[in-house]
Image (tube, rainbow, N blue to C red; front, side):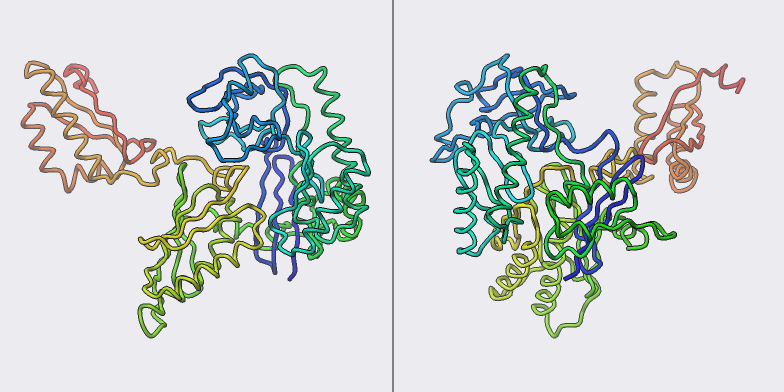
Length: 500
């Protein structure tokens, strides 16, 4: 497999794309002044403790207070027995208390940042939990012998460095030597010492540790032995990444290359711009002729699988199976590319055969193997749905690049001209009735062109009847800036109307 990292740097944003055999797998966008806060550590102050929610709201200097749940306030302590065994939040924090908090999830919509006091500092191969005392290994490493070796070497390296903290060997630590683990521990130890020093003199809301910028973080988290090269379109950033690679990933340093070829630009040359537009689309076409419909809401994401125009199988069950298998291989990539997190419900085409359902589940499980995010699957429900959950710390691609439509208010649909016309007629009738028969003047209506056209055509008879009913003229005016679902209707005094 050929993997490449493409880094596109400009004055206003940095974009990093991970490709596999030329196909886009992940895209990270960080805009100047609006980068992700995940991983940042702040000195905060507990503003309010809410026992009923087992949570606290913390001032870390952002526009909105951060949210700290009791599970994230344990400071590295382990509690057996699930949520019922958790202590009271009031036993852990109190109002006005000064704490050190890390952003676990970026602010999204009206929600503040999700915070944790279980601090974690990542290097290339290990994560250090300064307030813990255990050694763990990434669950994504399945080889039992390698897990045991990493657990043993990680514990030995921590002991050799005299470090009283918890460490987790990351997925990319597979094959890392004892000395490489030990060197990475020194890196995070030095970072932690600088954080402690800054905390002694930091004010409330002050940033004491900032996560790496997106391009360097991508090198740290995504670079593997399979990575063929890193292409960077900016000379200064290229030098910075080479320096980081020489210090932490010597084998990769020579594969960091400056892209200084003539136009087209880096992302356009590799087809990333087209892939990006498709990643924002609601519909995803399948090679078989079927398609996916992806709907993102604040609570969850739904994916509907449709067979579309494909009728190539011998019977309905086989058509459903083939379409579902293709969808199951495409969905994990779409989730990763769009950075969709939370609950995902997939409505596959109905299949009666349990063997077919198991085949689709195996395809889904295979598809999520490369996803660095934690993904959980549940089998087909009695309603034929597959539920998934995917951990996401940063906003989705659509959230970063788009905003709710000003016309439809984010619901994904605009009112039909017919609907707006009837709203206008109802409004004028109600307003005229409330004013009484003695009120003089004429109604003037400003609306979208399609609405006015319908009132003059299909609904012209309704308009004449209403005008006769209320005893007043109704004049229409096209307002180009008016959305299709809005209108403005006012009663103009008869004398003023005559002057017009």
